[in-house]
Length: 113
Length: 113
Image (cartoon, rainbow over all chains, first blue to last red; front, top):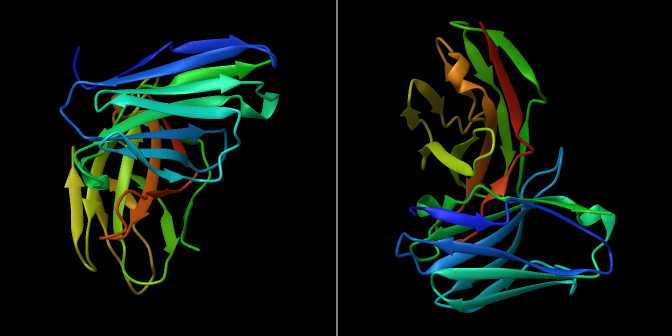
């Protein structure tokens, strides 16, 4: 595996479910990101981790809970989501907090029923 | 706040046609400017960038020139191919602003034979 991988690629969940999205990077980077991509809206930065510490939380509702156990893995735990949370969730990594080296994963397409 | 505005899509072109995707920005100061491309089923990839006024970024036949006077960074390609069909995102970032990319909403390009 190379680059940034995300699993699952597609997820359908009910509003009362608990699920987790997983991201893994094989690039030796030390910063990881979660973005939300909704139709006809700009990408929204949700969370940033640098050296496994959260450095950014852009007013994201508490029903989204990130976890970064090490520099290669990033999770997004989902609980009691709403239909408007349906979107493509993209993970990215970079070497340091340097946007020019940011590499993106293919995303997880989430549908909340 | 900072923002990026892109022309709405989809843009549909015949193969070998000339492509322009408009991008303008609003920012206090002089950001770095980027174009990202997202092929179907994949994550975003950095296509090209420019870090100061009058710089021209280029890659894979695509070009964009940083125009401070018009606060624009329009993407151009002289002859598109079917394989260029994707969504194109314009974005900005500030040096020292660390991790933050501000994206436009994306423009879908469809190239037909």
